[in-house]
Amino acid sequence: MSDQPLPADLTFEAALAQLEEIVNRLEAGDLTLEDSVALYEQGQRLTAFCQGQLDSAELRVRQVGEE
Image (cartoon, rainbow, N blue to C red):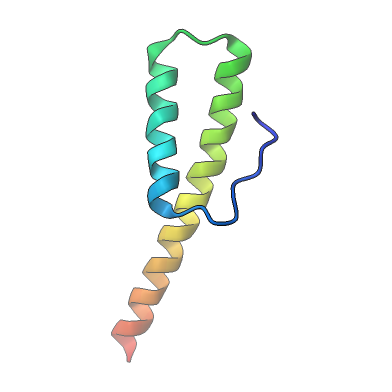
């Protein structure tokens, strides 16, 4: 799981939903260490993706405000 790239058509909302699922699974505590680490790595990639989307949206809002 840790080597899977994010889909090219991934939306912010879908990434956020995946992150929520990862958190729920990690909090349940019934995963092996290896599975936990793999999910954590996937969560890190999703977090970076979401942050990038938020940064882009913020920039667009600022640009609109400057017009």
